[in-house]
Length: 468
Image: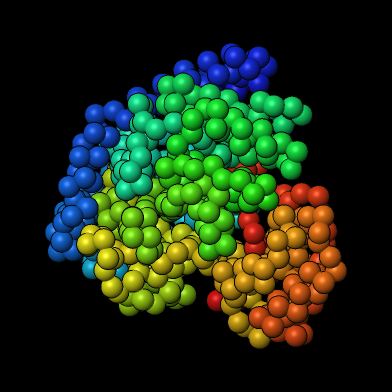
């Protein structure tokens, strides 16, 4: 919403807020699900069964057109090509991308205007920001075509979960980072309604122990069949059900925007009696990956962008080798981002998925660069390694790990009534067995854990430079 509408929304009574949300969603619906969306959705319904050779041929065709467009209308790329004595004909396939340099966040900040295409009219350009989870938000520019491609990819994820996203679909409860309920509110309702899309929009900022029961009751009353949100928020709801020895059967749970840990998936699926379908997307709109019914990794949406994995020197690595994810959008003509370096680390699996689709399969993003611990001896510790000490402890409501120094770890704990000193001793012992006996482990008991302004939660945060 624009600032004026946001101010009006905040000052309005609940029934008016519901009306405004519904009307605003109708406006967004025209942007997201217009004629271009239908074309993309139809393409994705068919292309998911193409062979790898056919998928790569599609990528090469789109890339060739994008490179030609960038050379002719984007000053930044014209200079890059001329400097390297390249012509568009020299970059026609995904294998040719190595002829171009990587594009970093700093490159975008320093060359923002020169990265915008003069061939896309100003009224067709949209501007957005990354969430700034790492403390440094980035502004990007995109056009309607990439919006349609993005929502078509999300729509296919929902269809893989046997659900419908667009208007007329399943009743959906959404638990993300939008401040839809004033933070000062102390009593229910902690949710609003988007009647246009049959959505129950739940505040992620009011989920205290005292309030969680009212969320579950409203989900049941509304007839929710699909739950969509951040893994950490979904986990809070699921953990409440488990602690209450209850379940709320749903059709599917859709998660994204944070790492989904195994312990979270297990409790979410048990509490909601359905499978979790996790998807990966970046705000820069260069990569999208979705989880199919086999639940064996994330399929890259190869029709959306070209993904590369590079090592710490920027060199492409072989399939199965972890590295930093680099993405090239195939649809964003307003600001073509070619070989954009994300913050995420993963690997492309050398084998195909059992579902039969040829789409590349990406390992889980469990090693975001800013969430990887770097120890004094140079070891890099993935957050997934740190989940195991917490698994047997039902006495912990929530936790967070912060690396304060190379050999000092702070563990914040929101305890349940049965939490004891023995549980703290268990955590210290098990974490030291993984990080090293010389690592100092400090336990801090707190009432709640902080979230970012976008409502996201980072389970592991390192305050020391990444040792790569």
